[in-house]
Image (cartoon, rainbow, N blue to C red):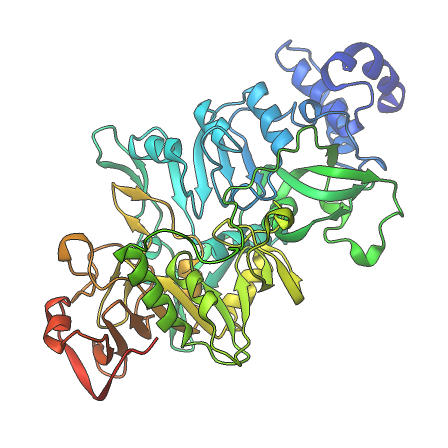
Length: 540
């Protein structure tokens, strides 16, 4: 009775200025309890129980709130936020801006990326609102990197597929699961720096993971993730909270939404219940608590990449020539009908040289199978990007899906071939390609998931670093991406296979570039290698 008679009064007199006159009971009651606490208003335990029960009970039929400010007004200090998006694609711009203006501090943010300087989550970092980031790839955010290396920010770098599955598991009520991803790496042994001290030493390390063996293979245990609030971006919603996503802007948004105790969805269009065909709904409204219509829609494109209208003019550098040589040779790894994942850089270039008569399906871990060519300028769309944040198109037969489903394809062994870059490779197939401690902090992205999937792994890289420094070593000196995962290495001077049948593994020289001798390859390679009986010249 109290709740029934009190609502009109609270709405008009007490809470209207705080939460808006059209706020739902959940928002109103939350604000009431917050207001009572500092004023030391004594509410009978039965009243508090009734209010909290009603607040957590049936949600309003219409979940639309009037503004982004209203939608995030009850986000407190020290909250854990799950924020959707991949790079700048599919991020809730209005909600992030409102959160920045409101200013809660000491936030833990779980998000695949950390925005860029002056945009997205980057503005929360610049405003010193974030205590810890849980991410897989932070890319080019210089302020993020500075705060982390100076000890101002805690960072838990997590493999992209593991991050997606931890969110999906949290939303599904699964407390933990085992995965082969990151077994044998610093994720397993707990040697990842979470926070640096001002003098550059490590002040806090990650927790080691429990391990278990299944069918002769090592797995590590990962905990599910839940958050106090999920802030997500969708294309369309109905008033009941059912969501439809567009293009690759789906990415982490459904997984974040499911794992949030309170999910706030920012959308471009709101329609009445019943106007969306039930078969077209990507995320049911049971996961969504509040909806706002986007107040700002810059939809910034991080890397506008367009189809070339002909040969680029100007001289081609030696570096470009070597990269193209490696990419052309890598393209010979494609077989008709393969499902292939290509990493950033040289691997992506390989798709320009697919042999005649060969059709492959390119999988992008941000939620696209059947990736088409780069768009013409008039076709570029912020909602269609690849894992390198470049604008792309789809092709007949393409499919779109969430990040967790993308990595289910990868982890489940449904992708035939992975080609990715490398910093170091060892004769046993160990690969390091994601971090230089204390210097380069970008994150592992999906690399750890891809190399542990059981698919064929081909590494493309220049044979030596600047100054002739070896990259093919007796043992990787950098933190590894995966143990004994590489099958073949393609460089600008050689093609080498990894023989894992012998203890410790060994490299076998299979092909050599024109004008390069075996002794040249030996001089450029730290570890010993065998020479195949039928060494061929690399033909591109």
